[in-house]
Image (cartoon, rainbow, N blue to C red; front, side, top):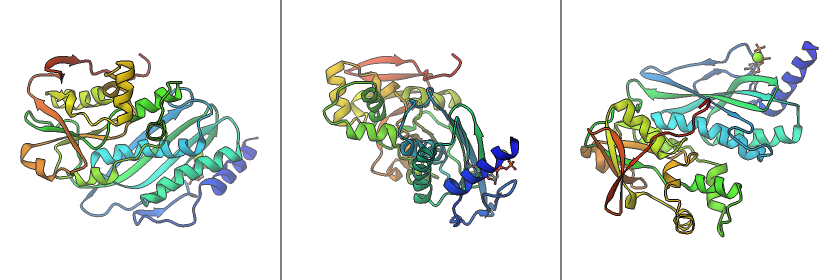
Length: 315
Ligand code: ADP
Ligand code: MG
């Protein structure tokens, strides 16, 4: 029984996930042995992160497997981006109820297409049977001591976003039945987020802190504020919102959505005023770090205190 399971497991890896080519110069040994081997160049540190996606918790049953493969990798690469790291390799732990070849083919296509785009090797993993649960561990390189942390914001720092807020949140609403005349952009941002890898690396030696927006601006900026023991004010008028999100707010009155919804995977970072001129022009300045704790939103001339809680498991 155990042997049969093993053969099936090995066959799945060979057929769907093993690539003959190793593209990243850090990969000394990829899939096939008990461990993979990585070379870390002198003067660099290894940034390591892992994220799990569970069916019916992080994604709906029946989600397009190609988009799922993309998103699973994207959310992990986004964590590397937020530290300023250059991704080199990933591991994939796959737990699934049965072997569905159509599903696996599409899932692997979504996953490996994104990996190849960034020269990231899939160097190993694990394959087991059980409820559909997808885990990736991602590794990246960062020049020693240069990683962008959450804990180093200073009063007076400007706060920036790498792109629009709330498009993924709108995509989720559309998935749940909200009617939108032009749904494609929002759905695409929800299903196929783009990890801001180039922006993250461009922020090394420019930004003082950085985080990626997985749980929503209020929650994720809240992590920077808590860990740096500072507060912030952000300006509603400065938030970068797409026409579709503006339209959604006009119709529903739900202006909190872009502040609370997750899944945008944009970078939120703080920069000292001296470095502001070095921030990529595609980024939007939305507020300022202050000594006073708490997250304040300035909207139509009034100041509102935002709660900084996002989605928490087990709560
Ligand atoms: P072990 O029993 O030593 O853990 P496995 O049979 O689990 O070995 O895995 C064999 C090889 O295949 C290892 O190199 C492992 O990293 C790799 N591997 C297993 N599952 C996956 C997967 N889903 N994606 C990529 N590589 C995998
Ligand atoms: Mg194993």
